[in-house]
Length: 109
Length: 114
Image (cartoon, rainbow over all chains, first blue to last red):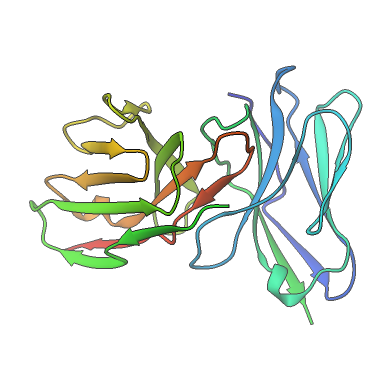
């Protein structure tokens, strides 16, 4: 399983973009990059995933470097409800998820 | 999407006893998983619940301690056996849908062992 490195915590002002980095230098060629988040006292929630190309959905954008060794999750206009632990997880489609320690994003008013 | 319910939502148990946690999904799913989240920690995968066959356990988890059943495509149980205070955790089930890349998680069962 590919290892990931994420900063333990980040702050972001409400209304500003939150950029969460992830290093996954050992990712294999057929592994996707998944992003999940866990709001306090809730189960994890899927955000977005990608393989090679950048992806965007109603929640976030995912930027993957050309060598696929790192990625950045972008929340374009962070709100207080986006305060959560964000996990970057390399993995195959519908396979098991191996969670790292994640990044605690604190959105400040 | 999938809606997942877990029972019980929380429980307080005495050491040496066992607790069975239920996970019910509102649609048929191919893959179901069980996770543990110890206080202040990230999630750790316990096992993959396979329909019609024995569960596949991750390193550090064994069937005698965490027996799992999956009698059909919408239901699974996890039993935490011979509990000790170290088993105090949140236990979550998740499911993966056919032709979908995302997993859906249940709300979790908060277990406290005294």
